[in-house]
Length: 87
Image (cartoon, rainbow, N blue to C red; front, side):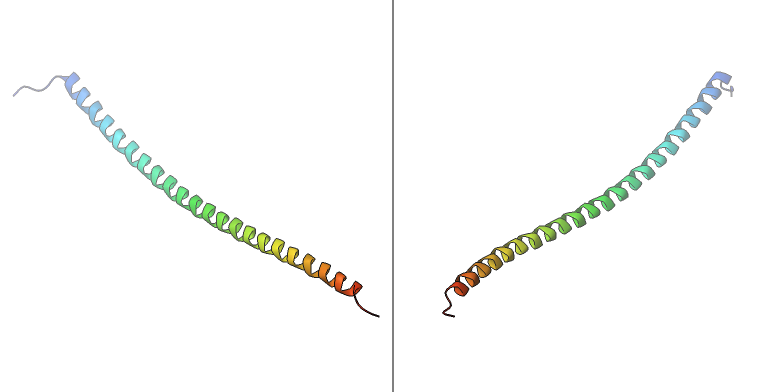
């Protein structure tokens, strides 16, 4: 059997190197992608927590505003009743 030409052997070796490099880059890319997805999930969780905190704060502020309105009405009624006393 004839031996393949040296250029063919070099080409075959370079092709194998390229394949190995491609495989290495693919693994590196997949690892970075997995890391980014993990970070994205963590950020989504933080955003949800912050949204829940904002919602709770707004609900509390609305309740305080309502209570303040009721308190002002009670104070106003109290002044009117005080002015009506017969002392």
